[in-house]
Length: 381
Image 1 (cartoon, rainbow, N blue to C red):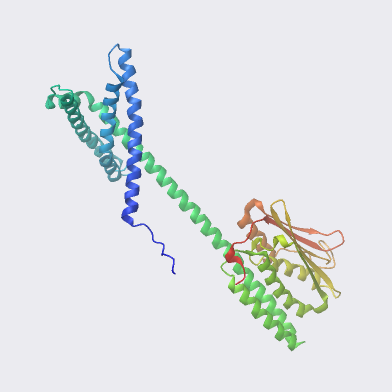
Image 2 (cartoon, rainbow, N blue to C red; image 1 turned 60 degrees about the vertical axis):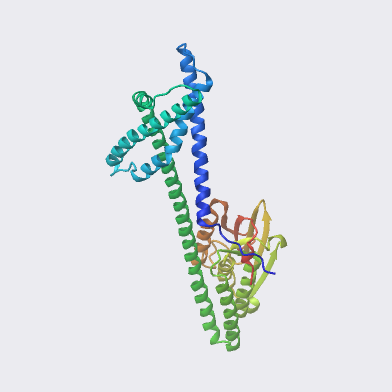
């Protein structure tokens, strides 16, 4: 039995939800303002020894602000149509002056209708025209203040919305730029590694054709793995080690017994997320400075541990070490430079990458990154 397909809610329903939410916010704001100005009316009347009940104050205040709540969609339309921007503010100012006067008159008419209804309920005679004239004379300034308050509130919300949109766009653009930079750094490693491997194959072709053929076969497998994960910035450490083993197979053919590799991995770190193709350039650097210059056998060790919420990876060798006169000094070329830059862009100040000399000779490349499990799509297919 097939599961029912998930469908997105219709656009019309979504708009209804948005409209209801805005209506609720407007109603709540009108209620809060109604209570606030009702209190002002009541206590102001009391200070002048006038008898105004809470019921009267609430009735007048709610009549005012609920009336503006009903008119607010028109005010919002005017605000959208005539925004206070650098070039159009004189036109917007004139439009809002006219809109304020017009809507103040409409609001006074609405209040007169409400007063007539209240008079009818209380069996009192209310002259509609006289009520409208009185409200226009006494409340126009107050109504224009209410109109201006709504206009300011709308523009405040609009500026805040635009600020959040620009902020979201800036974050998205920053993320895309960082992703593009990381991808560019990774793409630099691929031809760098391929060039070095092909150079080794070329050297072997003159000495051992069978070994060169095996190296080309291993290179094909390695390139397949690289292409399968070319769109991933992070993979599981287990997958990264598998890639490294394929690379070491190629180097083992090249150096034979001169290359000895020891891998000690904490089992709890196998599923940790690490930058894709992070170990190969570090091991390549160790081979270049500890194995290649020497006639005797060299040793490279890879270790992983989990330490205080961080994953620590170390690649050590027993070569001449830093500052030795018997070998070229360690220089950060493409592999190491890109490793340092990728770590900085991926983890910021939460990472650390160091090259240190060992007490008994050789160099240790140590990197520390935040420990987190790799996503399920980072595993080997």
